[in-house]
Length: 249
Image 1 (tube, helix red, strand yellow):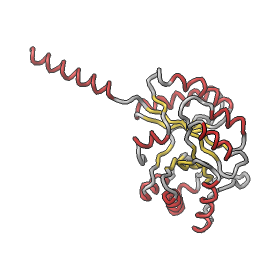
Image 2 (tube, rainbow, N blue to C red):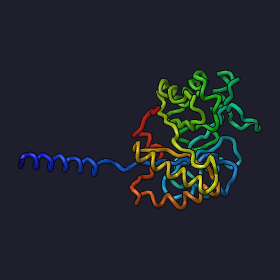
Image 3 (cartoon, rainbow, N blue to C red):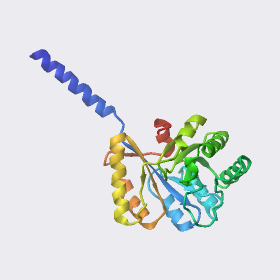
Image 4 (cartoon, one colour):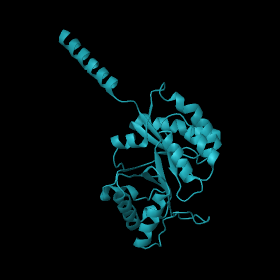
């Protein structure tokens, strides 16, 4: 009986030590679509904590906002437009299209990355058509790989995306988002998605959210981000999260 009690005490102590040593759930947040609205971009960059900022190429205020984010110690991504299934708006600067030749694909990417200073990674903007095509995703991963230590974030606008598989084949560090915070931009919906983000982080140990510089999204983040540490979470840069979570499908 004494032996059994000692054994149980040892097991309990070991389990407690493991729990104490386990890192807190990690959350990374990316704010997309910077480049058009200066004041919204400035407000987004002022969010508390190591939030990342995805800047659209060729936009009138993209370079300025990328420089402001970098000066604030924040990570900057190229938010690369990829062709969507049903997008009917005007052509976007730097857009990668299905009908492009390999040569045009190369030059378009080179022009796009040149317009976003300090970019350390690439994230997809739209892309519900292009990300399901292995050939074009293979081209994209070759471009990312050949530009040095860039990583790729799949915004995952379609479950048919093959982007991560092609990234792995090309040797590109990549992952995908878990939650869109503001598909519905109402305050209630953003707050609900933020809670879902935390639930996913608790379950998996980490989670990535994408939001936009919408007023209500920023309202929620300004209110909730300072609470994360006391709630047991760690808000981290996207690069730090990728260092722990490589090439997840």
